[in-house]
View 1 (cartoon, rainbow, N blue to C red):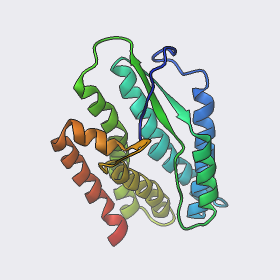
View 2: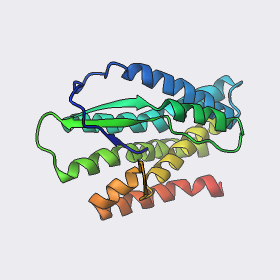
View 3: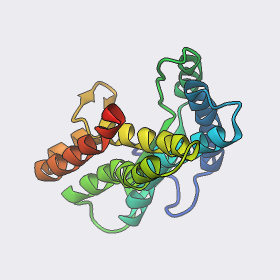
View 4: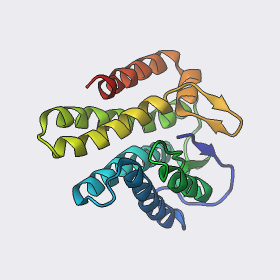
Length: 209
């Protein structure tokens, strides 16, 4: 997901923003319902749990890792849900063919300790897709090795993270939307190439297996 950089003068690093817990919980519930509709797992306890884990790792894990790295670098950072995006995800999921998933973004404020560096943006932007890649690596062998129905559940988590890792590493920048891949690309092309190739390799099994 893209990171929104915010220049306000309030907020305390390392503590939840006053509405952050609310935004995280609402986004988590809404996205779980949306993906359960898409994956047709809403009426299956195992499938619903797998969908919840896919959303927890794929979306919120992605955004919260942006937040964690930014805070460790000295920036004010918090997650903000996008209500229109959550509604759009629920509506498009009803088609059962595709979903437009934009639950929110990590808002990055001013650096409150230390000095900003050119590598800060690279580290913050890379943190989200790298999280997806790690989870895809973990759940890919589980999908291949576990018996049914657990292989199906693992596939939901693997595929969600593999797709998000790949998508977010695309070097795209549009008005109002700048993907993590673009931020990584403009800071260090070599890091972008390595990470993008890994994301492509991880995505291939979802097509051929």
